[in-house]
Amino acid sequence: MDKNNMIDIYDLDAPLFIAWQINAECNLGCLHCCEEAGHSMPDKLSREETFNVLKQIVDLKIPYVAFSGGEPLLHPYIFEMCEFLRKNSVNLKIETNGEYIDEEKADKMLSLNLRSVQISLDGVTPSAHEKLRLGGNWKKATNACRLLKSKGVNIEIVFVPTKFNIHEIGQIIDFAYSLGVYGIYTGKIMRIGRAAKNWDILCPSDQEYKTFFDTLNEKVKQYEGKMKVYFYPYDVIEELKYRRMFPAASLLVIPNGKVKLIGPLPFLCGDLKKQKLTQVWKNYRTSWQKPEVQEFINRLLENPKLLAESNKWIELFH
Image 1 (tube, helix red, strand yellow):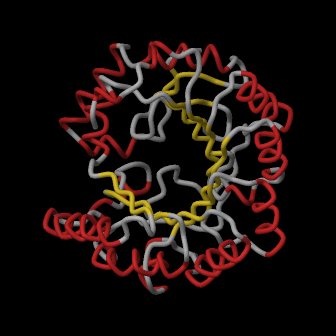
Image 2 (tube, rainbow, N blue to C red):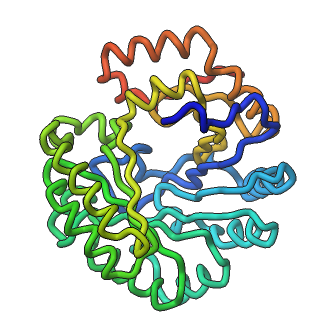
């Protein structure tokens, strides 16, 4: 994290990136789910509210958006949302478990000329993947990768290391290459939401992480010029220490239109049902200096178990 390469958010009239959890519904019960998905939010954005936010993104010339969930492909009008952004030249990524991708959806994704489709794959065999992603189907996820590749869609894989799959990192990278993906993303498991509650059964040891990152460095060299191998070496605690000084130029929107300050913290800095994106962006920039935010971060650094409260939302602006 090089502060010399960071953009000063106070120089920007709008964020450069929107991470939008468009729904909370999901067919899986992943042990590490940051959003603790698998339900329906009664106050989720209406169609009119959703497209109002999309129009603001376009009007503000925000260059890049990522749709996630829940499982975003369960959203009733996801492809209409995608079409709206793409016809207005907004770069777009869809983050999915891949299990709902069939011929029709693959063709639609190709027609949208997406930046990428990111599919979660947490093992080279069904056992590790399905142990982490309860109710998941490894075969469906891998078949989705093959189908999208055959259509010419840009694919990325994300791999979450845990005690029971971290040893597969070298194999999963080799497997990703065999699937023809553009790149693979990984890093330390995020201690947020359900992962924080299941920390004792999920978190690898320091030695396991050392071997993991040693392997990653080798694989970066092995696949240089062939496939991107991305990894983020910091955990959420290290991220928070940095972000309290250098906030990212991005907003995290949840399905009901509320905007989180950052994933590991419970604070909400805006409500897109009631406020314009420009106002929420102003809120975001001032929120980091609020005493209650700084005090909570200090307590969290002393007691990381507070990360389990990341989805117990606290509104900073009413």
